[in-house]
Length: 428
Picture 1 (spheres, one colour):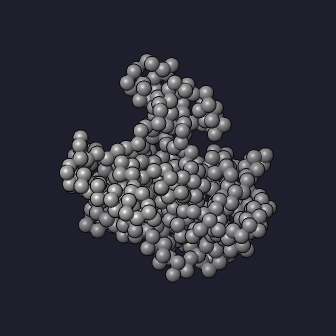
Picture 2 (cartoon, rainbow, N blue to C red):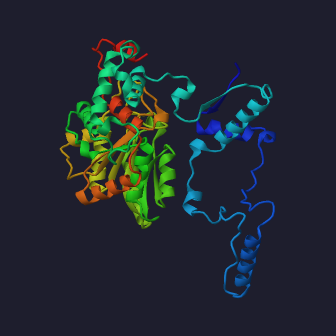
Picture 3 (cartoon, rainbow, N blue to C red):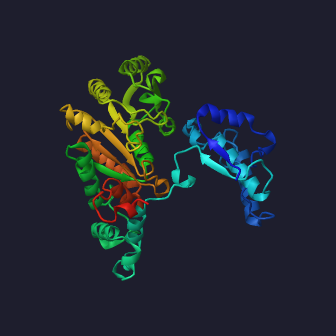
């Protein structure tokens, strides 16, 4: 089968775009129009005449809006125009048009399948979901089959046992109902226990906010920290475009710091200080530092000593540390090891009163790759009770995250242990 792969490095993507056949690019679609019918009714005609008369009666009155197209690029929020999200940019748009062409005219192109490699989305490329996760989700969504005899032969005993445990934590055992805005308390208990087992330091379930993937959690923090373009966020370059997009969307200023390719995309504190001082000299109040560890898209894993320097930097400069740790299970170099920033900060003796830290985790990455289930969480520590109330208020605006994602987040942080009897089959 002939395939065309969409994605890769930025340089490759730009090359592909520039080399794309212009004949395949469809023209921009015409603007949408709202019609009153083939001809306007008498009442609609009278209304239009009245509007015109009122408009002409005052020279200072603005012209009537364009009723056929009330929203234009010029009239929408300028922050949306400034927001760029290359993950779903021109390359993907071109790929979708090519896919439509292949569907309409098979064989019309020198390939007959497009593989979307522009974003970490492993199941779209054929990676199978983890059996244990899907069995537990299925049983939780359809609990009436738990008592049926045939279920014992279709599902592993461990999946059945975990499903019962989770359902007992859900009010009414209803996965289709709203939950607490921070997420189901029992699932947050499980996640906190998983964090504690990973780090060796206590974790509080009340510090955990379950979200629809890590992205909404990042948006929540940007909304909290940014009030104007005078608020800046230190962000790595190269970076995952979620950060530049969300900073622009919320009206802040991105303060770039550059990773050193020659040292394996290392993060130098001297570079952080340089960019911080330059931003402050321009009157920008730098509010937070984003660190992606393990790196995306660079893949580097920070040394623990380097993390200690970063923690000290944030402590000294009064910055919130935003730790994107969604790739914590994607480490491919034997001598490297992931350490959470919370673990590092606690090992340095810093507690809740010393450092504002937000740690992000997602079920989309790691070995599970459950991108479409939209599960994740953020753990917030070091914030005052008054600020935490505001974070909770923002979370409450969305009512709650989806329950399937919440369940998956708890499973990711508490997977089956290798000693259980059905372990081999659960990870097929």
